[in-house]
Length: 384
Image 1 (cartoon, rainbow, N blue to C red):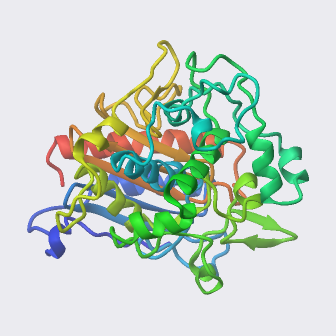
Image 2: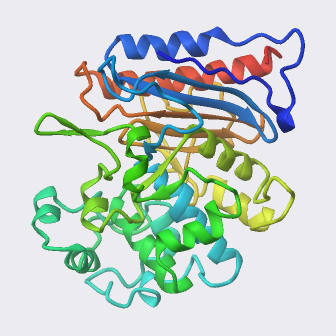
Image 3: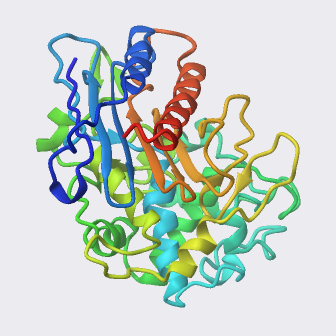
């Protein structure tokens, strides 16, 4: 196991004298490894201008010969964090520039999306997951499509299963359509636009779709094929069929890079040197809760999940403020941001890789919430 602590790295400064680490973070993640939830993890906790805690735990696989996790350089399949870091942020930039209008019907940008009941579905409803479209295409349909172009045509034929605007149905179909809107409105592929307009300006050097072969040795695997660990290939079947670049999945990154992105969001659209990539009011519009249908349902902003999360054990914990926003990923990733406290928590794991417990998903949810609570408590008690 490797532990790489970095405390209060404000503008590259040395740790402040007298400050001590917060051991609860370590014990929580180490317990999850012992319980077989994942073989390794990377954790980042910070504020708008400081990474307060950056640590790697365990290894890329369960083998003791596997490489240790490094929070600076180990790459994780972000799964649905792709939706917020790439797709939603790209949409936010395009809305800010006037290239996309969120209350415009989707068919204006994707004319092929013209099945029964789709005419009133807007870009906003894709972003808030209130389009009424189902969660995903059946797995047999995805695998049976001969190529990505065929799969996209099947997506365009989708029709709402519940009336648009009446409930949240978290849907990969929404995200795939948003990726196509980004491509058509910008004239660039989703990965090209992300590299040029997001990861490039933010200097996210470890964040990319389709990691090249020379990086696979430091990429956490998310699957096993004929006894061999599979790394660098998006775990999501839709993303894989679309060639590794899709609005719902496909992005790989490190904990350090995701932390830098979280700071960009806390700065309301500004780069570390103060340059505005997007107006603050646009960032606030995208991260403010837009829909909530009450009870045990989840809140949704534009692309982002908000509190309440609708989970029995919230991935945002119980202490993050009412304006908090974030997202999770199937492979075992999560990012939560509390703008009132000005704190974020990034947890990257490869839970999808051969978990040693049948409760890996439930235990991961519990861990996410516990880490968020520990971060909030440490900040509130001035223990950083």
